[in-house]
Length: 147
Image (cartoon, rainbow, N blue to C red; front, top):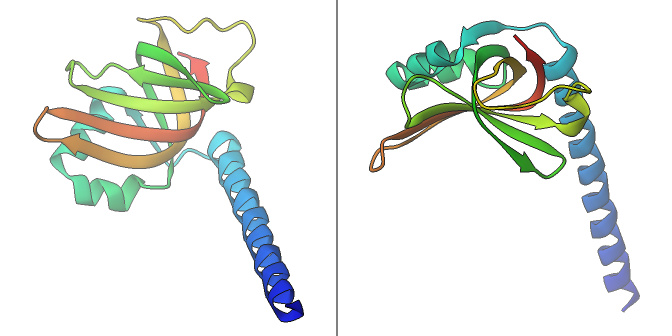
């Protein structure tokens, strides 16, 4: 019985240690995405076009890199601890979305449809749903500013 308790305690300690490391790494990449240098700059239309035409090449260039994307707000939706912003790309079925932590929303900024903004964050990749024709590039750990 004592041996099982020791193994359980060791397993729990290992899980806790891994959780602490993961939390630290996530916060470290968030800080880099928010305050670090921008690797690439796009408009929302340019980024989506690049990904839809050359997905593999775009992943090799932009995935997990800090990018800046200028665009016009299509919609804003609340998510846990922040907002999700969809940018127009010129096609109703194609969007660029950015997840913005509530701490990165400037005080007094009003997010409304049609407003020009800049998202800066870490590129999380591209998804295309062929049957419905939906295309999306996601950006996470974003900061937001008016453009």
